[in-house]
Length: 284
Ligand SMILES: NC(=O)c1ccc[n+]([C@@H]2O[C@H](COP(=O)([O-])OP(=O)(O)OC[C@H]3O[C@@H](n4cnc5c(N)ncnc54)[C@H](OP(=O)(O)O)[C@@H]3O)[C@@H](O)[C@H]2O)c1
Image 1 (cartoon, rainbow, N blue to C red):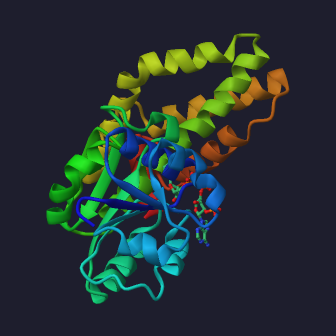
Image 2: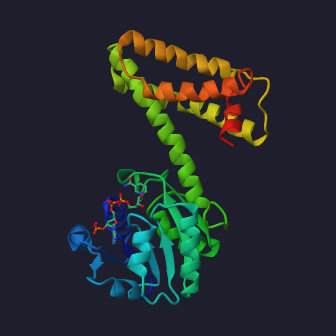
Image 3: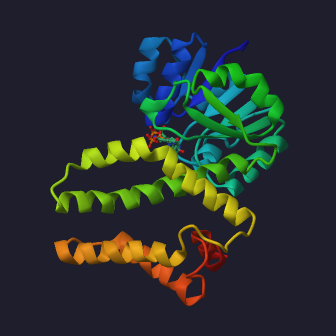
């Protein structure tokens, strides 16, 4: 068993995790529901075993990267996990993580929860982030192995659901920007400007944009809603301009319509002269 690691799940993400471990000379046993996905890793030196019982028996440390927690629970059902260290890298909710920790501890094993905040081709870089929460002892013990997967490992504290909460909050922020970007792309197309240039410009502006998000975060935490540098009224006006531009150029504008509807609720609630962060009061 020694320092062997077992990796369960060889989808788009799991197979890259396996490749990184093999490249870093980690002795690896892999298992996947569909055997054919193991072919590449077998060729690179990983050991494939056809049944998950043997895969789990092969190592003390088991890393899971399958579609979700339900699949993880189904895979581990009925297996002897006594003395094992289970590291979950499938995405889920904080409650998923809490339930899985309770189950794994009751079965005589240790549990660490992690979330990958990158795509498969972004893995293995010094900046690649994976957030962890739960048992800090396991995190420290396995840090060297986990560093082969991602250089930027962040421990988010002992509450096991914390990593999943961070994941969902960051995904919400990122996809909020992506939906906004799609409308930005339609504005560029309508005006005959290359969309790729918009992405490049956003990347160059990202520290400034990030400062704005930072400010909203601190405003919310301190309940600091008055004395705006740009009032909610001015924010709403931006979306009125986008709607007018959409009408002028006959493009559809679902994202500005959604944002303006929300901001109009903020105006109606009397937050027009407050900071953008005041929108949180509606959501609460
Ligand atoms: N891809 C990304 O960009 C990315 C980024 C961050 C986090 N993640 C997370 O990483 C995890 C894996 O993602 P992925 O992109 O590798 O997904 P994927 O390519 O769709 O692979 C899904 C994996 O789950 C397995 N699976 C699904 N249902 C199963 C079941 N009932 N029993 C046994 N195995 C089952 C699949 O096995 P088969 O091969 O047999 O179908 C496969 O190994 C997800 O939780 C995802 O949210 C992915």
